[in-house]
Amino acid sequence: MGSFISSLIGGVEEGSASAEPSHILTFHSSARWQLHFNSAKESPKLMVIDFAASWCGPCKFMEPAVHAMANKFTEVEFIKIDVDELPDVAQEFGVQAMPTFLLVKKGKEVDRVVGAQKDELERKIEKHKALQAAA
Image 1 (tube, helix red, strand yellow):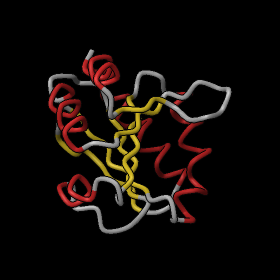
Image 2: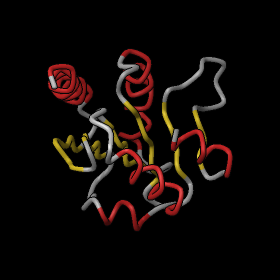
Image 3: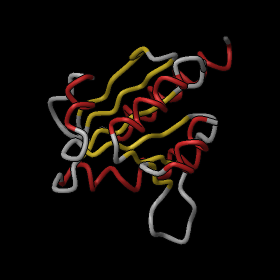
């Protein structure tokens, strides 16, 4: 519901220009991100936050894999944040390298993957998604 409200008031973009629908939310405003993040703190749903930059080669390498994971793990919320657009959000989470993927539940970091490590990211999503299903 938070993402629905945010999409009505702007600052959130779902997906990309491709014909295939994406399951990744992109935030362009710190205020919109904070609104969404605060509402997600109430949910046990796993959230994967992709901290990236448009100039980052490894980020571009990971993009197709992240889109595939978002389509595969539909019960997981995928978020993309450009560190140049929202440096305060990146700083809040202690992001120092790109790409950095944060796995978050109920507003708390449960895991982190730094770098273009597709297999490790997928393994950690599987692990925390399974813990979510068991809860």
